[in-house]
Length: 402
Image (cartoon, rainbow, N blue to C red; front, top):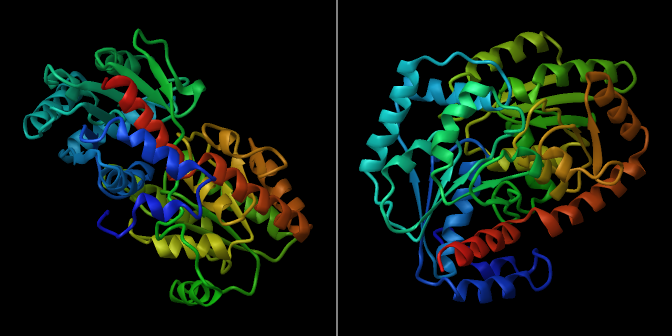
């Protein structure tokens, strides 16, 4: 049983039929194997949220799953943030000193951790260079959560030197993959329907939570939940809201926070507050990384959820909103396009005007909002729950650790 009392049996009533029994059978083939995850933060961002839930359930299934978090100084995280931006297509400057420091921090972290596992899963660019210190036994896989479809050439050339030394790589979408001489796998991220962020909430609990956030409920709420990051285009969301506001009396809530490995968040938050100005119907909420119930209540209270990213690794806030029966208007990028079935579970857009158009279209038809919301929830049940994620990782462990 995991620390929060949730076992694999807890998912029987929410996962697709047969999913729990299949996982139990699959886990018998790798029981007792050691599976280590390595990333750069224990809070903030989708990767940390996924690992918080996945690792305990893997242990419940009889796998010795562990989660290591690397440490670094501000210089290291400034470099890895530049990697994040460069790999998603934004030009960045890298000096030799930056790249050398990146490698030195990775070597230091590898020396402090026990990495002699049957399978080591290294998440994203921050710990990628730890492959230089791998022990002779075990298999190592690089798990990339970001959009690598059109990376800055120099950044990818540098990182690729490490990636090719792994036994395999995992991407969230086929479009993110690169030409590599190692096997590549496709694994969608997932949400946990029993986590505080996604569990059922009563109407009274929702109202009480929004009251504490000082967000009134008398108008339809348009909501975007995301880190304050330029790729999430919060300014574009404000501009779309201003167009919608001419026709519908709505309220906009931009809720999010930062991550410990993202030094740009505070600056973007300031830009968002400036763009919001003194509009009494725009609420900018800077929430702590553990504000899961607040996010849950906001998503359940929202009429329409927006995720107007211009670049996106996967965008789990889309799956979270759809699980709560909400239509989503999202940027036509990355994993958002894998989650939204056009006109069935929501709409994808490439512009401020497109976002405003579909928001207005939905606001004019409450019946359509309900119909799309129901289809969205079922789409998540079948494709984006943690039980499917566990199935993919256990299958990988069976395949690679034979």
